[in-house]
Image 1 (cartoon, rainbow, N blue to C red):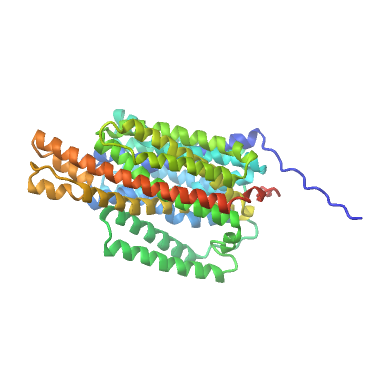
Image 2: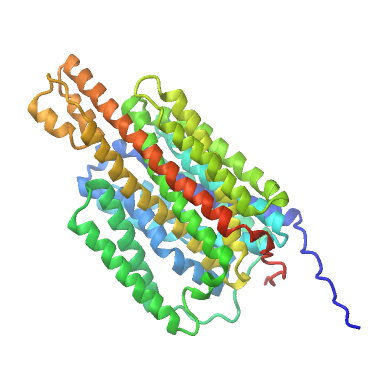
Amino acid sequence: MSTTTPEPPPRKAGSRQWLGLAVLALPTLLISLDQSVLYLALPHLAADIRPTGTQTLWIMDIYGFLIAGFLITMGALGDRIGRRKLLMIGATAVGITSVAAACSTSAEALIVTRALLGIAAATLMPSTLALIGNMFHDPYERGRAIAVWAGCFMGGTALGPAIGGVMLEFFWWGSVFLLGVPVMVVLLIVAPLVLPEYKNADAGGIDPLSVVLSLASILSIIYGLKELARYGFATTPLAAIGVGIAVGALFVSRQRTLADPLLDLRLFKVGAFTAALSILMVSMLATGGGYLFISGFLQMVEGLSPIRAGLWMVPSAVASILAAQLAPTLAKRHAPGTVIGVGLLVGTIGYLMLVLVDPVGGLPLLMAAFVIIFIGVGTLGALGTSLVVGSVPPERGGSAAALSSICGDLGNALGVATLGSLGTAVFRDSLDLPADTPPGAAAAATASMEDAVTAARDLPADAAENLRAAAAEAYTNGLNAIGVACAIITATSAALALAMLRKSRDVKPFDNAPSST
């Protein structure tokens, strides 16, 4: 008679692991802060270093472009040279480039330093998430740890404008870049004491051509999507997206021929991994488009300053953080796919509430909807990311973490481009210009809400007020349409989660604990 030896339970995390999580939360918070904090500083730096319009766009975008472009490379590099080592190299680079950005005296210098800061920051995201997989072997504890990680990322994004506003009240524009320096110093001191090292001893070298192809593909696609969001359908952004897709196909083809690829395509054979990535990307499409119009409503319809608008967004950040922390507990009793699906259905209700928002007196309803939307976002951020990282072998954790972040970036950019175009089209079609609007101002106002607000500044008081009211009405119509589209997208994501992740409880990632060195 044969007997089967039961698997030993996964090791529980100790105080060192939880302290290590606190250390990993610091760079995660910093990355998300850096992506949103510069919006408030833009008028100040523009007055100081006087960038051109094109230079301003590159100052704003180059950081996010290069983070997204280098994520796959940095995830694979961390798997090879050591995730803690790459994290510390990146932390050092982030500290140095942050100081350089703060001290920039020209637009060209700021663009270069922002680019270097983006490359350095790309080392942090996959390293932090992959190390959590190495440190927490128990699925529930790992889910809880990733929930903290996701909460820091979402909270930092929402808190960026508020923190930036406080900094600019007392210091010069470059101070917003110095927020990361003490954080990186703490990480460099504490990381060797509490974080394990992990690398794939069997991995080969990095294929340079794969690096170039992945970078060219991702940068081209994200650049094209952002240009579509700004200028609508035009030859250049569509061509950029086409080139990115074609180069991406070459990248995938090359990975199939390599013995040790930069991105192991076999990961996509894991059902939970592929499903979670798909749902993350589709859901972020709605989040990106919805966030764009909601934040615009606060500043252009309600007339709030950037710092006040940022403070109004804090409740949604709190909601997402609380939902992320609650999600692992619910997933202990129910399949993660069920929890994600229900969370997204709750978010769908929030998007439907946007349909009822009016241009006058609509702020309380808008903020209530925003909070409900981010309950779904927080649930998905915690459990979806946990499924992505937890359903792959430990030696591929860096690549999985990178893909999770890339799907979020692509979904967000696609949402801004497509839903932004939808909202702008509704704005233009429904804008009923007042009779007292001069022809020049009328021509400018029909382009976008931003142009309408700018045109109104040069008009007499009554004409300006009439134009702003008409534009606010049209912009709110766009927001209402965005609410319908986002509700459909989010409900579709919920259905996908309930259908594709219904067996995800059976995934037991990292039960065989990886060795640390």
